[in-house]
Image 1 (cartoon, rainbow, N blue to C red):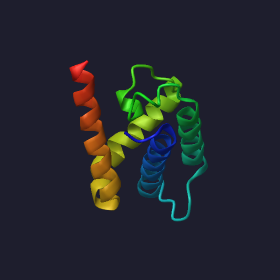
Image 2 (spheres, rainbow, N blue to C red):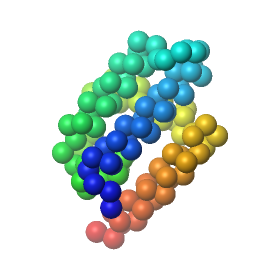
Image 3 (cartoon, rainbow, N blue to C red):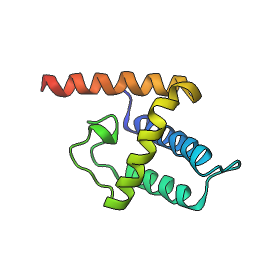
Image 4 (cartoon, rainbow, N blue to C red):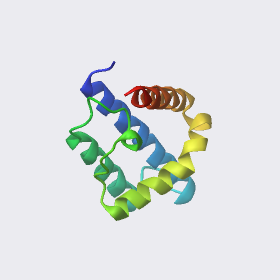
Length: 112
């Protein structure tokens, strides 16, 4: 199992790529992120940095405690729904790794 720092970095990379893809496709940003997407990315990164459960979980979707504010949670959920299927085409390695780690985590949770 990866150490906490590596897991945190992977989670940030995945969410950062998803937000970037969302902003590019939905907000038509060619360079960087729009202000709303920048704020969402920064918020997601800060939540990941402060997560006390990082050692025992893989991704926020597998966590029992949802620490996002309701509005931010709604926004990140929109990003995930839009980008989830598209990540396989834009970032296949990240998408497959995310899928494998998520399934492994679900299996581990069921065994408990």
